[in-house]
Length: 280
Image (cartoon, rainbow, N blue to C red):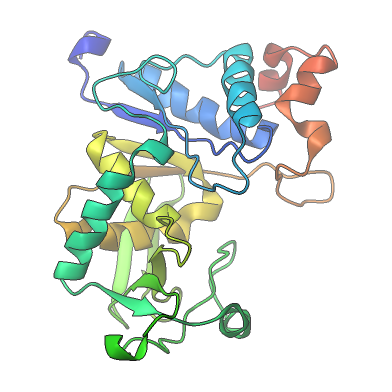
């Protein structure tokens, strides 16, 4: 590969505008940019704004401003367009509905009417470290659609219980998770008619022809869920590279509640991006 135009590498950074970006985001996104540049490839910016209640226009504007201030450069995105537009997930619902319909036709998903109380009870079940989705006990797996009536329901993907799911991560090496033990049936479409992260991520990465996904280590288990979706949809999966998480002084991984470590606050303090990157 002699130039960016001849490279087949396509990476992406995909922030969600539910708050201000922090240094943890910046470090992972910087790894994504460096890997794209090293491969003389393309870096895509995708705005993952599906959470209607938490995503706000001011956070979108701050996201673009803070990323540029930090030194990020992308070749496709919501602000500049590109061949796989739109790059705002809120504008891609038709794509997600087609994917859900394909999963339903293939018998890979089922309706789930479990209440919040049911899910809280399921949260007591063991699940993989760093994974925020509890193992679903399969309560609605054989539910007759006629029993749903007018009740709200989500769509869950039926995992092949007992199947070992493996992949080789670009940073952490071989990974292995057992369906039904390390993770269970997962939501692909929420009861409030919003596509879940797993479905939207797979649909977009496939449509945008992403060849490598660089993201935080907290999403290692999400990767095997997404690999199952790629298989069910008969889509080629990208490779994966998971970065170690950035933590605070107490060893707690950073979240958007860590306002003092947000790029916005750091910028206001007069610190320069170059100073931050030297610590990495």
